[in-house]
Length: 233
Image 1: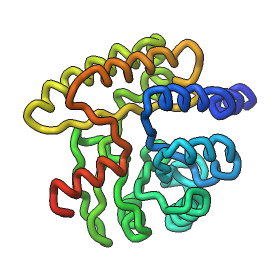
Image 2: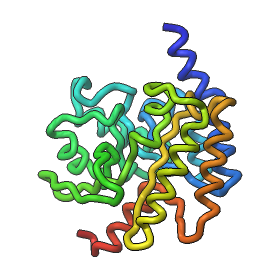
Image 3: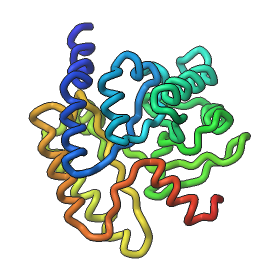
């Protein structure tokens, strides 16, 4: 399947670097959802993300749904180890490939030291999840301002991430006058990193940054804020 392999490979060879430049120009840091195997397969890109101070978030060892891996515990553990070996510290967050889980995924994540998960797209604020190993925090993710949905599934025009993202932000900013709201932006190198889409992501960031009272945080920064607000509960 050369076309689909090459599509994703283009993202890591070219698109990734456009995203990196876009973020660095605005002094922004990403939460980098990364397969554990990518730390060796795409070492140059991962090294650049590490140097830029991005947060590494576990995203499976290879890109495979969690309900199809042979051993979830081993997959999670291998991903944590790969990221820890590469960055010097284990990831605090996790996003399953395709947001897939089984009934025990959250339990296994908590048991293996993961503190927050991005699979549960159910709120605009962090939410505590009970597991057999204690609390796991859901940090808001998105299937709305997400280029897989917008560009690959819905096949919207190139500027849709800007139009939809701006509308999303405007309402959350309005709601934020009385209670904090979190807006996630999910981008992938092989989609938003292409020439005809990248300027719309840049415009969206510039629009958001033009408002007062907005912070641009990584997942772990959101987690730390939430834990401070709730007294660690």
